[in-house]
Length: 232
Image (cartoon, rainbow, N blue to C red; front, top):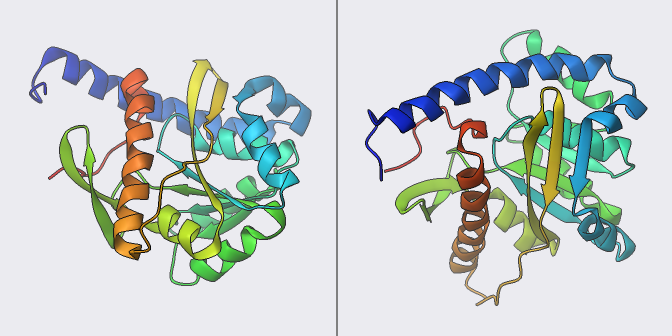
């Protein structure tokens, strides 16, 4: 593990903040794009996994990290005809409604994070629907996992929801291709033997999720926006 003052660590950290600024600019860009224009800005790999769920009338939970522009990734799903529900953080003041309206403009169902989200999320899985949950950073009660050889606490939501509803649990992430252009990668559903012990199964599923996140982040460390304490 490199120390915080290592030159490469500092370079990646600076680049991450620069990339975050680019992501915010591209969020404004989304609102100006027509659906057909959005498709020219975003490429996707792994749609066959989502199509298989839809064919089987099975809901899917997309566990995602805070990488690149997750809004671009979510918006392309709506444009391509997938029924996607996204659970999102609230923005301060009147900005929150403006952001939500932009996200809904591409056919997304947007649920602000909060006490009432669970029931709405379960409804979003019906009929082969998809639910996207960012789960790489601490957010309320969680489960301890091994993340980059450190102990970290991540939300249990994706695993808990999968066990409760029988929906498939997948992972996905978004990365930059070039300025204003992105690529979305969707991996196949996680398949693990379950023990029947709910707490143990949740821990195992979330460990499998962050194991995949490690691969994504290692390949693109400056596109991971982990701007809050995570590791113990």
